[in-house]
Image (cartoon, rainbow, N blue to C red; front, side, top):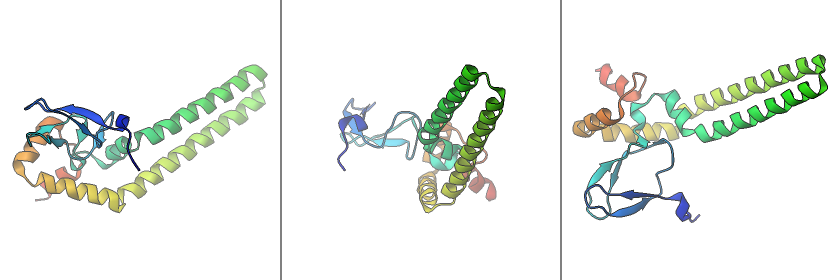
Amino acid sequence: MAKRMKDYQIFKCPYCSCEYYDSNAKKGKNIGNPMLECPSCGKKSYRSSVLEPALIGGNRYFDIRFSSLYGNLRIVLILIYAVFLFFILVTKNFTLAIYLVVAAAFLYMLYEIIRISHRHNFLGSDEYDDEITDSLERLEDEEYAQMIINMQGMEEDSVYYYEIHQE
């Protein structure tokens, strides 16, 4: 499937001022290789909008990766709550209000169960393992690892933190 130009983000190389497009960069925080190589001069530059996966904890990784999906679901829940509140205020029926509050609580519990089970399944998936493995391979270069840790930081529940303190 062909990508549209709005799916790409323009970057300007800090070394040669060449402008180029990157289809992997998205608005907000992204997860992957934070170093981007300029196609013109070949030098690498750091992108603060991209986080190295092995340096962030699994729960935060999941929240960043699926923030738009679950953010949209939260908006739907808020709209449902607003409709429930509207019906309660219009009808002034407290029996209905109790049922709607129970229904809203049930919907929120269902949302949380889906999100937690999806997180549990994703963090045990091959896709997550592959991204962490690629990240750990990049972090084997100590100079690269130190630079990325200085720029991005490292969480104590990250895979790389566990690998360092395992030894």
